[in-house]
Amino acid sequence: MANTGSQTRSTRNIVIASVVILGTVLYLALSAAKDNKSYYVTISELQGMGNKAYTRNLRVAGNVKPGSIHRVGTHAEFVLLELNHELTVNYIGSEPPPDTFKDDAQALAMGKFGRDGVFHATQLQAKCASKYAPAQQEKAAKVAATATVVPVSH
Image (cartoon, rainbow, N blue to C red):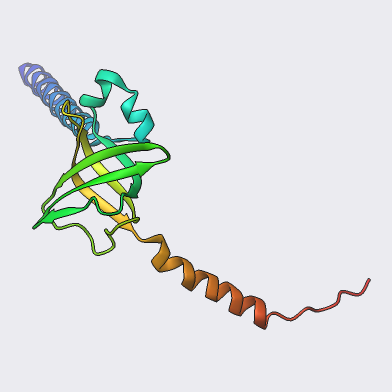
């Protein structure tokens, strides 16, 4: 009989330990997910966010203003344009900006907005729309030129 009481206590301790471990793992997972969450905002939305802009991880997209890129190693400072809005971006990453990062390229900066009015990016993606657009237009033209029209009989 004393043996079953000991087994019950042992089982209860295992259940309690399991619940504590599971709770800890869940808390850590949720904390990490919250820290890694980033919000996509336009430049105009960013400039109108007030104090919320300084506390969140953000993603901002726009076109790189011609002549605004200043590179030094893995660091780049530039201006993003969106309609009539401008945003100065200071990129400091572990890798240099991508090869497609040029004047007029579409860029996506990920980081935090500083109280100095500068977006401090730790990640940067860029694509040069002009590099890919002609190839797609040429392909569409070739497909159209080789297409044959087959009459449908009713």
